[in-house]
Image (cartoon, rainbow, N blue to C red; front, side, top):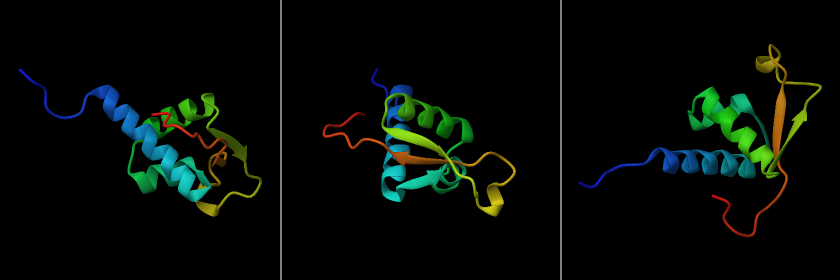
Length: 89
C-alpha cells in the first residue's frame, strides 16, 4: 500500500522553505506579516523562524518604531543573514 500526499517531514521542509523565501524576497519583515501573507499559523511561523535563526540563516532585530498595528507586542524584524550556495532544505 503506497501513501499519497505529503509526509509530516516534507510539509515541515516546505513550510520552512516558504518562510525563508518570503524573508529573502522582502529583505526585512515581521512575524505577523509572514503569518498574514503566507496564511500559516503563528506557531508554525514561530517554529520556522527559530529554526532558521538557529541555523544562522536569518537574524532577529528589534525595531524602535513598529507600525501601528503591531504596537501591542514587541516588534521583531527578520532579515536574511546568509545566502547559502546549496539548498539547505
